[in-house]
Length: 135
Image (cartoon, rainbow, N blue to C red; front, side):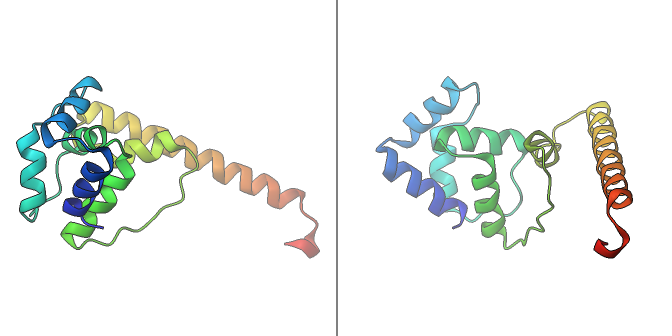
């Protein structure tokens, strides 16, 4: 489902106007205008929206950031490569780093390095405790 279809589906399901959907986003601390929602149903998008816009769309549409991202990728003809991430906070950070400061991105990278190191250490420890015939 592309972004226009997602917006129209959520609008029909909620029975809200574009302005009411924008108000819902504002009530949730996000900023988007009703006319932007309308425009997104009428025009093809040419580039990936900014992270703030993705979050605002999710709030306005009462859906998840992941669903909005999937719809955007469909609209742009992109194919996402899924990476297994056990921590949803890390997945959200990876998805929404576009408007982060260099310091925040560096902090994110350090957290990811720590998680990867932890996972590798766990796997190595598990491999050592398995009998040789089970490896």
